[in-house]
Length: 475
Image (cartoon, rainbow, N blue to C red; front, side):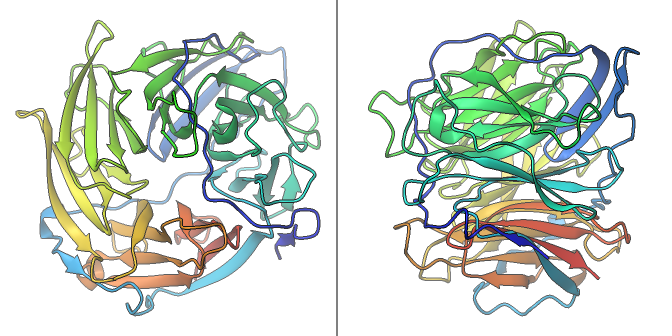
């Protein structure tokens, strides 16, 4: 049963309400501890191995395995047109279990084993908005099957940073930054121009609140992040995207960068390296890191939800960047997925576009992308946006299926909302099936086998007005 925080946290929501300012200057770094580690990451698929010193008790339990993604033949996917209001419910059985409700604002979830018990947990933050009553601040929680929903951070107001009347801690990732084997949380303090870490107390005091550390400030409008070793030193860095919001300051500048991990012994701020030129990016949402051109250096793909353009930044051996731009129609498209269809180390991108989905393939000769439209929902008169896309073998037939969520474009904090979670399965000729129809935008999806029964479950983040999280257990 979900804990309901309507009494301590009541009230409404503004739209995303993100502050943007200029990119600012590069700055130092943060962390503590001692460790040798190697980690590799692309999108949601991450492997983390940690070897610690004998000075402290550490977590050595492997992270739970992600469920099989399956194989895909993208050329066989037809163009599917659908009205999402009337598509049939999926024949796959799901049982929804609400794990958090009554938040004042919820935008961003992560699934990981934070407590070192070998089971999946869900991290989520109750943010504070201008329409919410005091007390102000953002509060972090973890959900586990064993312990339910537990508070992990104090109500945090990020003193010393620029105040906007909002406290929004949104999209975040699990990353062990202090080398004790326990995964910490790194995420976007959207309202206060910062990337912030919360350090898992782990075995020291599992009941203690998680310590806050600023990884980087002067990061206006942080909207998304990806974990990847950008300089080949064996340490996972953080690739960041910054957006220009209409409510931001006049000198706001969007763009891309990466925060250099100084290592677990350091307590300095993380230096920001610019990826660019990228200051013309207005709303860089869908973010993926891989060595697309095969030169041994990671590149960065990003789509702009405001201009409809996708940019690929190719990293040269000298650490400079070369840019390819292509019009893919990504207006209003938020977050997508990556899959290595050919097993050649170069992932394909499943990209949200204006009321639809496209499948992108990298053309090594042209050093750019080709694409096919696989889904169109423009039959609907009321505009919606594709909020998130995730991939997994949902029906256990060995083939990749597409799970996606939708939301309503913001008009006001109190306007009626519509959202939902949908499936496209190879076994059903890719026709759209509804997992859930909703009255809230569904802004993030995680696909994990939460109950370890061999089936892939869906963890979903419902934004305003409901601001809740639900696990859809696949029966």
